[in-house]
Amino acid sequence: MSQLQTDATLGPARAPGATFEETILDYILTGKPSIEPITVALHIKKETKGTFCFESDDAAAVVTTLYIRKAAFPSGKPPSTVHLTIQSQA
Image (cartoon, rainbow, N blue to C red):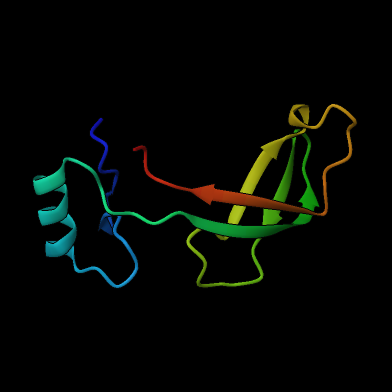
């Protein structure tokens, strides 16, 4: 998979404010995607049989729901908030 991650419905991920063409041109010229890190705060919403569900307060966030396996929390208790950072590889 290339460094430029794509989504079947949204097209290539891009820097805020960058057009599709600017993102592709930047990737062609530099070989690196021009994506600024994005951080989303997600709050515990519910517990399922094997996971904890975290949701964003912002319905327009890039990630609105995140399920994390219970095994990721050795104490068995999840934090009230997790912060998810999405960034490109340099």
